[in-house]
Image (cartoon, rainbow, N blue to C red; front, side):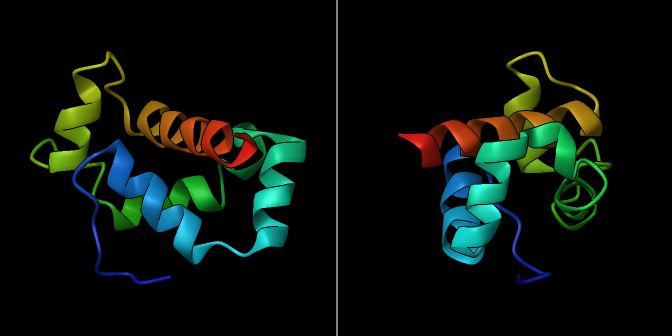
Length: 87
C-alpha cells in the first residue's frame, strides 16, 4: 500500500482500501471484524493517514461524527469498509 497517500474523508478511505487490499484480506475482515486488525491494518491507518495529528483532514472530517481518538477513527473506517465490501 502507498505510504504517502492520505484520504481526505471516509469515502476516499473506503475507495483506497477497496483498491489496495487483496480479496483474501477483505474476506478476513468480513469473517473476523475490525477489532481483529486493530494492531495491524488499524495501526497502519493511524500512522500513515496521520490520525495522530489534530490537523489531519480525514481526522477532522470523521471527528465531526463523534470519533475523536485515532483508535476510534481507524476502527470506524475499518467497520465502514467492512459494511461496504459486504454490500
